[in-house]
Image 1 (cartoon, one colour):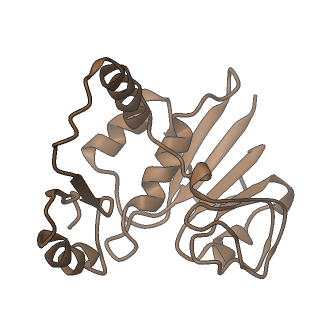
Image 2 (cartoon, one colour):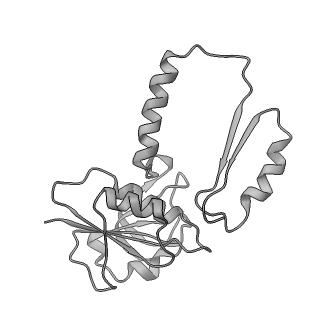
Image 3 (cartoon, rainbow, N blue to C red):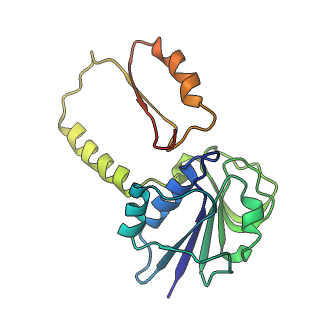
Length: 196
């Protein structure tokens, strides 16, 4: 039976984005019978995150023993030290900071067009096309697309700006960017995550 281990963090300093991506990957379509394990290195699951994990059958990984997994996905702020625990031939690493200097089968840089790290990977996926999107957002998107197909365009409507930095904002980017955006002639919506 195939097994996938998702290794993530959700500590107050790192933010909740790594865990959010891991849960979005868990919600993807996996082969029938695939076991999904979550190893959370820092932080705890919120009630909503626990619900998402339970809905797709994710179970808690036990300890740091080498997993009996056919795939390990590491999504933490500094992935190299964690990734070294695993066989690189079964390893996929998310590396927003271009800091990974190890070996992996797949490397994902979802924040930029190019990955500039010094590590090695058989396959590098870079760009926004590789950002994992939650099942709930995918459902809303398809509903919104159907509604907009029926709507008549309103050319006089003010632009709408959405500001969201995930579940937490350790660097207070929201506090720095909102005053600059507030002067624009636009409707501004600011989402404050549960760990702000």
